[in-house]
Amino acid sequence: NAGVTQTPKFRILKIGQSMTLQCTQDMNHNYMYWYRQDPGMGLKLIYYSVGAGITDKGEVPNGYNVSRSTTEDFPLRLELAAPSQTSVYFCASKRLAGGDNEQFFGPGTRLTVL
Amino acid sequence: DAKTTQPPSMDCAEGRAANLPCNHSTISGNEYVYWYRQIHSQGPQYIIHGLKNNETNEMASLIITEDRKSSTLILPHATLRDTAVYYCIVRVRGGTASKLTFGTGTRLQVTL
Image 1: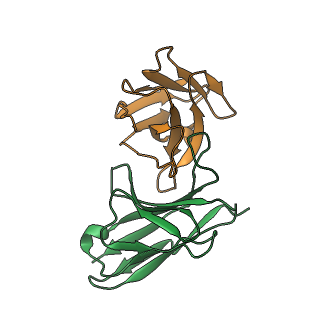
Image 2: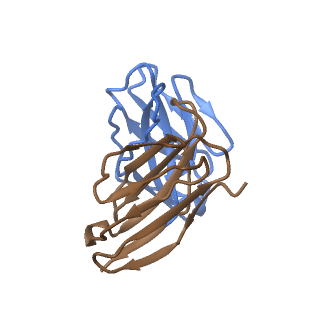
């Protein structure tokens, strides 16, 4: 298994541009998550999904959108990029609900908005 | 989810045991203690988790106090590759989303 993969690894955007961060997992996990991590800080949850067709907001959803049309893919969309969205973005997946199993993380996408 | 408190940084000599403490004094009976680590510029990596018994795997040991208000992650023989930020997270056993709430963690520096 490749696990959780993210593309691109790096991206520079201009203010007002839009882009989609891709996330794919091949472990048939139902639960998927998007986090952002600002320099020197912990991760903050943006959006999550408990299965195909179901998404919900996390702690910091403003400025982002997601969709979950398949089990494998969970893209994150930035419509009007702002400098405050400069961050490292991590996608994660998890097999089951509940506290007794771990999340697997992708390698991250480093986004800079100028 | 219960809040956790960790020291911001620790040092450890290579080959020695690294003992990373975590305080979670408001933990509920149905909450697990999870440990993740993040090596520079990489995604977080799961280490271990436990409910009330001590746990051990190939990476580390987790010691949870009897009252469950604190825990210690033990890396028995730290190497330079263990230099990372270590996150202690308390997560409810049930629930539909299983979200993780990350704090700022402990930055462990392993030195020669």
